[in-house]
Length: 83
Image (tube, rainbow, N blue to C red; front, top):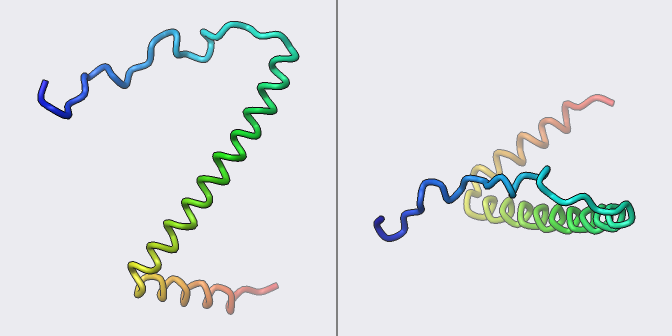
């Protein structure tokens, strides 16, 4: 293989990686895992939204004409919106 190439089956999943292959846990463990995973999901979502907002701000700075056109379209939508 040349430098930088990945083997073809590097991205394939093993049978042990499947969600059904996990060992069953007791009920109390499921409750704490669900709470931890929910908190982890909220943290990941907050991080994603921060990065998305940052990327949008960067795009607006880099492409001012497109950002101005988007602002104008939004203003027009708001003017023509009826309650």
